[in-house]
Image (cartoon, one colour):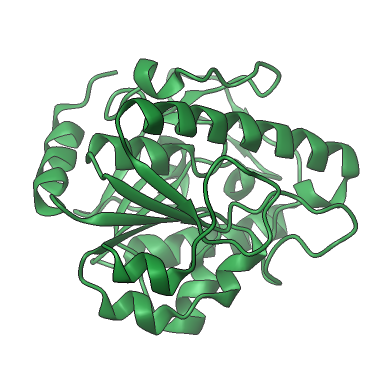
Length: 259
């Protein structure tokens, strides 16, 4: 559904960030290895984050420019009624869901971070000037993500609920960033540490789900690569260990020196 207020907000941010470069954060372990002081010092860099990033923000006394969260973890373990909609009923631990809610609340309360969040979260979040409730398009996880997805689905009216970083790429493409780096899009390593210690997701506990998640991320990055090639966007992978090969490796220091 078209949202004029949301479009105006994104247009204003697009103008504000004109000529900048981006750093997209996934939720993989490599984000714990970043020198956040370098990020704080660079005024040409726009940072975009998602889901359970609050512990990293607290630890480094840092807040990103943008944050998105569409995932279902905050709503698990309890039934929620939505007006004119089916009941929201995700299985899982309600105690963990409350902790994840606090994580999202921490991100949303920061006035310097523009937040784009699932409209279902109005069950535990209050509206404010810098948080924007979005009704995303839920992508069927059993259907491969198409390589032309970013041409077919554009914000503000077609935010995608797919992988956690999908809407971050959508926003970057909307802003016409010509240089983008990714960190924490590592992929799931079988029999190895996969998330920073406070992450409350359960996907990485099951090998079958890890393999499935890696396939989804790979399809997403294939689509990102396809779009970047057509529109001459330079994308770099800052993760030292990553299962994905679509983009050349780089270091944070070198990336920041060249933006």
